[in-house]
Length: 398
Image (cartoon, rainbow, N blue to C red; front, side):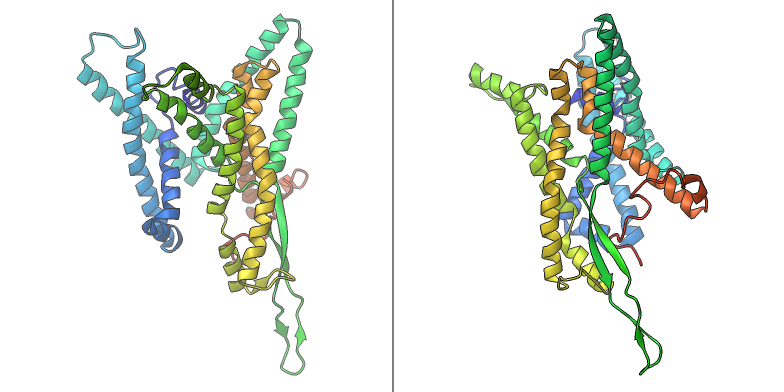
């Protein structure tokens, strides 16, 4: 887990930098607020009924929760630093060390949070996601160089290019699944034109409802990783555990072990279904189609439409969840074939999904900006297929 945080912060975590925690507390706070929106009526009301004022209140709650989480995580991080021999001067009083550094770490996280929000408001794309992506990509050239030097020293330079080709294929498959949608054709009710008695039915508008193959994004992998660290943490506080049981539990903390990857894969599949059920509501889709005077050909409006959409989501989520599971265990597979662990981490997991997902979202924002600003001639030869015209979106006016 600490290594994963270090990747997200671009190495600042290992270096005990001012931005050691980066935007991770903000991400944690955002996830908590999002989950509260499914369980607490007050947060549900802020998300769905109060519009812009509700969104501002949620942002303020997220900011305050970020500071509280940073104070807790910052304390644990400083304790980790103090346990490193020679990391802290013995002449510094404990009170000065804790008070000054907790303020510095909190200020660094607040600055990252502020910078991310400014990028979102004034820049292109989601600022927090871009900051995380920058931290990940910052370590990618070093991983490439280390792998190249290792294989060149062993006279296996051809293997390096094979690894790059495999990495390229994995990225292409990730793009394919992230952009993959199941298009449900929908039809708007016909309207009559002309005067009474001589009216003719107008051509009914046709569109489609896009259901993403991977609606859960990277969240199932994050939840599964967090859950995988619980057994090893619990062993530290348990007494009377024999060595065999302790070794089996500790094997679940080794990301390159067989049992870790088997359990990890199953958890990712389960969490994908759970998170998709939370994020995608077939009932909301059915109600929106009914309000828009639209329907799915051959399906009755209302409950039948909701069941139809739910059945399709269940079917398309299976390949999406299996692919996420494979992406999650791909680093260990790459390490098994001799790829060094530093480079293997980029073959899958949250690092690859964040890099690809943020890049695609940023390209979509750039393309939308060019189209709305009448610069569409710049992208005629390089339009991103399936990004500009993504069909009917829930809550999108016609």
